[in-house]
Amino acid sequence: MALIVQKYGGTSVGTIERIHRVADRVAQAHRAGDQVVVVLSAMSGETDRLVKLAHEATPMPDEREMDMLLSTGERVTIALLAMDLRGRGINARSFTGRQVGIITDSAHTKARIARVTADRLREALAQGIIPVVAGFQGINAQSDVTTLGRGGSDLSAVALAAALKADRCIIFTDVDGVYTADPNVVPAARRIDKIAYEEMLEMASLGAKVLQTRSVEFAAKFNVPVEVNSSFKEGKGTLVTREDADMEAVAVAGVTGDRNQAKITIVGVPDKPGIAARIFGPVAQAHVNVDMIIQNMGQDSLTDLSFTVPRADLRKATPIIQSVAKDIEAKSVSITEAIAKVSLIGVGMRSHSGVAAKMFEVLSREGINILMISTSEIKISCVIDEKYLELAMRSLHSAFGLDQVSQGDHPAK
Ligand code: ASP
Ligand code: MG
Image 1: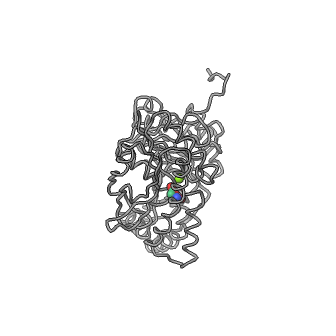
Image 2: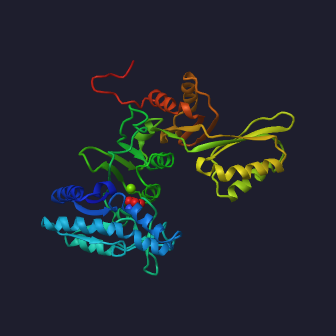
Image 3: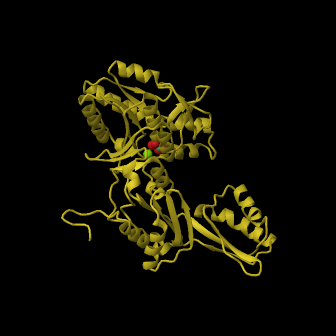
């Protein structure tokens, strides 16, 4: 008998019809003999609706009250599902975050989990009850309701799975897993059977929004096997787990594209010690995250410095850079928004050499100019002209052998 945590997202519980279908799945796992703990999100759109209401009440809602409000969305779905199951003669019970002992700090609206007692869950399971738990919420040391940040019910599920030492935490969502690239951009993308926590984290931070990032960090820390699967169709999903030999055997696991960056170049920067600190100090103070930085070899003790910042922060960063550029007597500042970052991700990069060289070759073959490069142990990113992003993603996806082989086809050569 396995202990499984099943988490269903907002679209999966968005209507009563869909809640019936969730009840079908829970009942099925229960009949198969598994012990099941269910974690739910609010109905899709509900949390947004509540946030909007709060801002109609007052422009800057108090955060403790905000959590009191937002935590209600999940109470609705857990009660409805528990009723449905009980109506079918299945012994289910709903529980709030407080009742299952999800204890957090006091950072309202983005609380961090401090510990999970889960006593009531263990009791319920021992009595053969199916617990249906409200995701996204906990309580602080004063017993005030807290929430874990948007998308936080993934984290609730993983944290409960860790506390109960569950065999698996299944995240049921509207996609059937994690793909080698965004299928909307790369039609040949395929579902990945198994992906390492670290790869998933890189994919998530680069724009693949399947799992909340903090839930993946938590799963990695406590080694919780997480499966992402569709709540709408039967079939295999993607297992997010510890790195293994299969994963290391392939150099590249996925390709991502990111259009959320902008590039700033300061031309004619005096090439002397202390200048970089004078430029990036004020940028950091304004809480603007600088991603990539390159400094070109200069002439006549002048150099050019380029870096990227999130597009959303460009308005904040521009006046700061312009004023620093003046102070240090640089020649000019130029800004380009029409850039994009294409990245290759894979734990196999640690043991495969030549991935970067091949990436550059593929891009050059397509006539795509590389503006900036950055690498880490398991990732290589190139900044390119935004208009070539889709072409770059498709060519790299295919060159690194990630394309789906359709039935009847045989791989070339
Ligand atoms: N209902 C919350 C949200 O919309 C939590 C979640 O769905 O994971 O952010
Ligand atoms: Mg979600």
